[in-house]
Amino acid sequence: MGAPGARLWAVQRITAAFLGLAVVVHLVTIMLAVRGGLSATEILERTRGATLWFGFYAAFALCAGLHGAIGLRNIAGEWLGWRGRRMDGLWLAIGLLTAAFGIRAAWGLYHG
Amino acid sequence: MAEPMTARPAPPRAGRDRQHPTYLAFLVHRISGLLLALFLPLHFWALGQALHGAAALEGFLRWTDTPLFKFADWGLVVLLALHLAGGLRVMALEFLGWRARQKDMVAASAGIAIAAAILFLLNVG
Image (cartoon, rainbow over all chains, first blue to last red; front, side):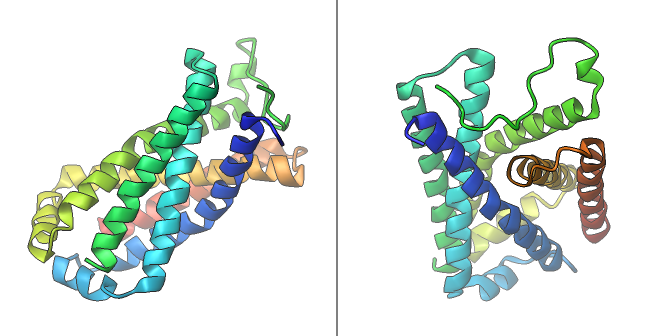
């Protein structure tokens, strides 16, 4: 498992396993939350101070960011021939940046 | 750069391969993944913008409370469900070696995605 491709493959599958559960939780939460409409006050009343939920969504954002970036890296490699260590580093940076945006949004929702 | 696993179906070479249900499943998984990966930064950015207090969030919610946004929301849930179901199929192939009944697994993946799509539609619509 020394090659970057192998490590990224492992990260892709580990994040996929977490996302498999997280997406189900996210979809069920959305379906329950939107019953009877949504209001900002109602949402924020429910979310503020819910540290466990913040932890869940921070992990969700990290996994989604990395999973998406590795997926894009694989597609770019196959379809456009964009390969190499520099490209891998760039995709990793894009994944972490995306995740940081998600964690920032979750922080605003649960602690802002 | 060698990939360690070989369970992923080989890219089809002939036109006939492209008609196989597993190729369609591969294509749906890839396209749904691509669209979701492109959407994700937008989703996080929009949420971040909306979270400058209750008033900003309320304004964002009202702004998105249109039939077009509801349809787009539903489309996203469908993409998510399709990608999730397709991902479960890939993991079952790679980690459990479930290769004998591939067509059944494609059908089951499609079923999971359709069920999620209908459930969401009934709830939101």
